[in-house]
Image (cartoon, rainbow, N blue to C red; front, side, top):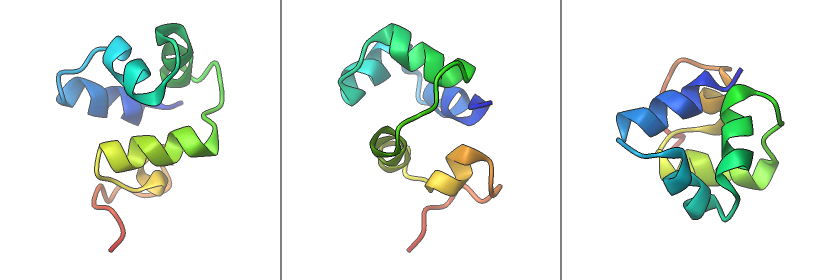
Length: 70
């Protein structure tokens, strides 16, 4: 479901542990976000969008435009 957060993480050559540390959660929790086993809370979604310099809509698959909103 959340394939894009995995792809963005891998494109940045980061481990799940790296992202979990940034988000102040466990690696297991972050893994569940990537696998779609757990819904991503809004505050985490916003942090991910800012970290990857994209929009929340892109992360959620609502647009294919990777550029953030102005």
